[in-house]
Image 1: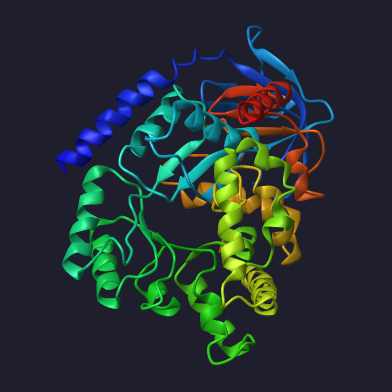
Image 2 (image 1 turned 45 degrees about the vertical axis):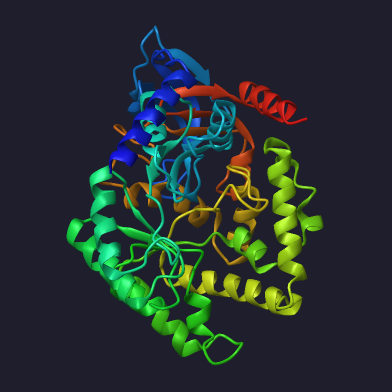
Length: 440
């Protein structure tokens, strides 16, 4: 514990030196916008949304919102204003990384309208990052963080699992992250301690527990649809309709949230080759040695003796079918991509994720809800956000076209607001170009 406390203190000192605090902005008014409040699928024409500090202080038809003479006015005529998006299975950098890398990676999220990130790669010192984005000294999304993972490599007994739960609660982490490898006894000890302490456990479904048991023990989110394919195809290669029905019923009964991460999991399966993904333009925003390591890992995965292209393609297709069935049944979805890793670049990874959600039959509105209002509902005890409403955190995206017609239009931006800080698209592109130039 003394080691962790020292590490956290060092992280705070590091971040204090990283970036000077940003000056507070005056009131900002988005005028004449088409507002997508995300409380429903209606597009509200000719609205004004007034922001002060990090909050929306008024929102409604133009004639009903008074805009102070001193406010900065942003003409939104012909544009669409929606809440910022979320990355609900993201990674935030280690405090051991360079200041430039930390700053650029956090910006990649914001540049793509991702204003909330649930980080699932916990390391000592990362809680300082959460504080830095919250107080504005580091431009980045609002962070909610899981501590260092519970896995077969970090836990060696049920007693240790329970003890580590209490330690992470005391350290201030928001979640417990589950990775593969826990024995059933270790998983159950962790789950019981987590339920007693009131801290959610999230992430993978460890094979020893299995899908149904993990849900019954109270796992709050299941990421990557982990455990579902294994359960619904047990005993064969095809999806068993009865098992699928059982899985969906328990998922809904226990109010489990799902973070599909469809694109990344296709990569993990080995379905695309490194050559298939090498053309992704967003790779220019990541360190070249990291991209090269991603290519090597994908090449090794596909060259392995157990790799079967037909099997990888089949499972990828089954995941689409599974996501469609879960969504149609009303299971609760949260947007996530599991970036950065293996050709999945923060923020930009949604370019790969959203089309697969659409392939599964999710409407543009359903896709957008999974990254906005649903996230606000999931984190309702932490803050108010995910809708355009008075009192909501001022996380917004101004778009040039209507994403209710095509969710991919979230990339047709005029600018992004994160915690009340407005960044026009011209500045976003300048900063992205500078990041790319730094890696040339």
